[in-house]
Length: 396
Image (cartoon, rainbow, N blue to C red; front, side, top):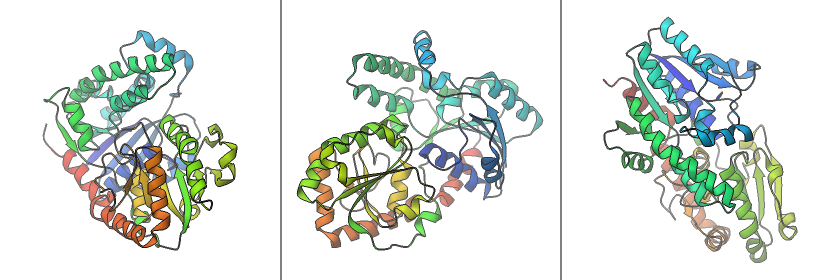
């Protein structure tokens, strides 16, 4: 099968969930013997390292364009029907490259990653009658709804509400232009179908690579917590700041040996109260995350905004870490509270569950074993790739 895959970002380095998701779809579908042209936006002309890695399993094509947020762009978007997060990606450079590749090649299917590029579906259909599928890594309207609901600043809240209303109209309409919307969770699919029952959808979750499942289950320090994720993504930042402000003091008061380690980009945004400063170790971005967290015990996921599946949660379960997450953090993952994961939706519950893990090593060890087995049975990329190709080959 010859596949044209279109992505809103370069899926390398593998330092964020969006990149990881795109990268592994490409890699594992190619491993089944399919030929892939991957065209993607890049913020820079310098893509030598990414090109070298991606060329091992696809032919990469980079479209250089600035798609980052800008205050002026956000303000001007008040007069547009298209959500701002999508409008940044509607560029003639991308359309020209896609047209060039479709006219030059006989593709069996076009795979579009993220709603941000779904506008291309209508343009592609004008050029050639070809199957187009959309991978919804998140339900964008759900993320925006939760974002505005959690805002305290009235101006930001109003702007986010306007964006949510745009997504409610735009997302179902764009999904309808594709032949199938491949949703990442049943929750996302049900929400999308509530707007239009006629939409053709299927559900394929995200997964983990064998690298995570093959890591040795070594000794960990039971008093270590850790958080993984770029704080450039606002929900990560607000969730972690909430945890530091609302949970850490209680934890230290009841168990002074507890330490929180923080990994990821933009960690300079955090404010750490003096009372817990000695218990919070901010490391930032690291090249070898697996080595850094090998001896860490409890992964915290204090998200109050999100959609789709958190790939990092799947990876931490695969590494046999004890994951303590909000309901939103584990959304779309069928792990059971108390068996493969621990769920907490308040500061009190977070402290209670973490202290339970610290004080019950045997029971928490069972959760670690169950977590890894759960991922092995349900969320490997090698098995999920077959579900993508099955969707690709369906008749319109």
